[in-house]
Image (tube, rainbow, N blue to C red; front, top):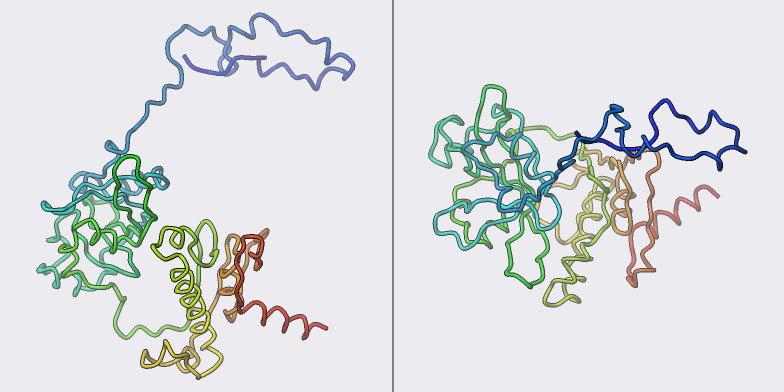
Length: 327
């Protein structure tokens, strides 16, 4: 029997005068009886929590449904992560996987995704087969039951390193698969672009545990040339802000030339859904949107001077302009 030991639930210190609190002495039975059931502890191990090594936390795509894969990956979504079995027989390494998300129904998947793999229907696709990619994430088919979800998206991966070696940063799953030597399984996989002819009216930016903190400092620190990587991240961040701002101007920045019409010409509204905190370049993304929806208690911190970083951001213009309008 397991349980906490101490005063029974019927004992309340608040029922005594404060002057008597220091005179209260613990009763001997409090050391022997469980608080939960008031019964004597009979011996044995309590609350045993054996260590589950990452080698035992591998999804079995033939047995585990998408919900099972989600339960295996989510508790391990830190360091080193949950390990996947080799995806091909000649793969150089296994993979750590992160960021699992369920894809509820196979009906929403375009038929072209299956035909590109040589199948005529979703049912013919074997379990653990990569079906689609989207923005670096990879969609895997899991074991099917009448009540299970169709498949699971995995957003990020990491290639294991040897012992006593630094851990590489997480990278998009599609890149991790290629880096680990599984690249040929993605040769015929198409990008899931949704239904053809779909008329987009709103572009929403939605974060997870945090909205966005701007550039990826871990990636910069790991790069062979941190200075060049920093500049590339800054330019990429500025390009995203320029793209979001194209909903108020037909003028396109250089990186968008030949990439289609601006958001203003397509009449697309941008919305920032800030459920959690945002900082640095993430605040610039927020201010670049037409509509901002923020949760109660969300903190927006545009300053990162204390981190030793300096650069011009959109908020330096937007915030000063807002203050001028208010004054």
